[in-house]
Image (cartoon, rainbow, N blue to C red):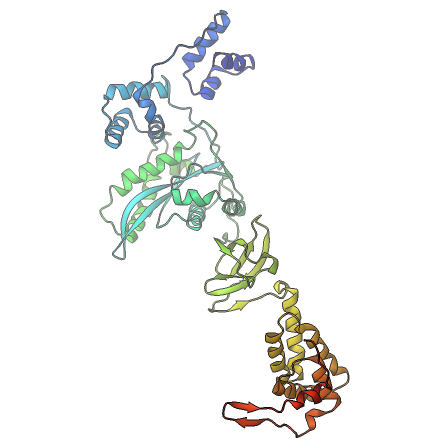
Length: 474
């Protein structure tokens, strides 16, 4: 560290900057600087380990929440059953904080920044049912004017919706929103997915704002909002006389107005009065549309299922996983690289197959084309089509194309009658149908099918007449 400090000093860094960089006391930096000046660079002395080193992250977190040494000692002994004296904790805390103030307060310009976080609020009763409740908090960094909301889940749409409510409460938006170290495990797990980050950034952009993250090694950057969450827990939740969710929501609005008009403990100014100086951006004309985001796998038919209906995608994506976004009216679908590959209007029915023409594979389009042509010929043509597809699933295309080509020389009625005869005698090939048409066998009344006890008996000699004695390979 001595040589690192020497390098930074030579680069013009101040003692305070170096102390913050290495998270050490400024006295230590001065001592090193003195040794360097006097030409006596010696290795640093080995410091004794403290039992509290194992709980350093916890202690730093408590300091971020502005807990004093008494409360930190109490929490450590209760949480970890730690046998340690208060004086030892006090010395350790002092070592972390240093002899001066624990951090330099960050001064934000009016309208420049808001800080956001979630805090757990405990159990409440909603319609007689026990539910978990979380606290959303947004605090404007300049004025410390705050917005708080009780929510029933930790989902991203809820989190985004709370931002919108906060902006509307402020009747404007700050230039940046600072969010980091989400305490909600559920929200944190999904929030850092690329598609979610994109949606969050799009929402802020809609409100002429942008997201920023906390600086590295600066745990006090977000102290404003974390103090706000702690204040709600200790002064609102604990003071509530009701556990009814709806009543608590009403009480929170009243309480928010009161605490925004109190003298703030850090700034010693009234947030409401300072809020008048905030230079917030105007709200947009329309609200941001919130989309739910989910994952789906495309089935073998090139569709995904969403709310009891099936929506098509380009057939080449079948079997792949996609991301879907929906606002209840529009369904947007993205591939693994988050490229949009389909958009559908959402059906309000159930069991519908919504298929776009561009998504139908080529072979399916050919099938539909053949079906339409045969449908115009007649019902017996469709029966012939179904039969030949079952018998020759891979080789029916040329036969059907040949059947349709007869329309150049024969009427639909003649072709349909010929196919009726072909269906009757199960002669599902091109030459047989051609023979029936050429010989006008469909006009003859010599059907020799006779009823038997088990069905129908057909004179097999008819096949020779139909095919002219030729044996055609199917």
